[in-house]
Image (cartoon, rainbow, N blue to C red):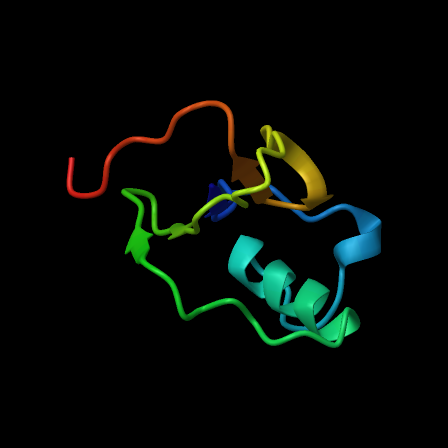
Length: 92
């Protein structure tokens, strides 16, 4: 499972619900979501910077056999998950 934290393109403003001080990209938004949930930011995992300056956070999937799919923007602005698709391998 990869959490994909993107950086915006020039002129790409967050939706009104995420126009908050300090929210400039997906990493900022994930920190806000974690704070709202009373949870620590999940940074203790394998992480790589993407070519455009975003981040991919890699996690193991649950062993319960639960299917975890992709989400494009469902968690928030520039916060996606990749659990059934693909990501470009780190370092490529």
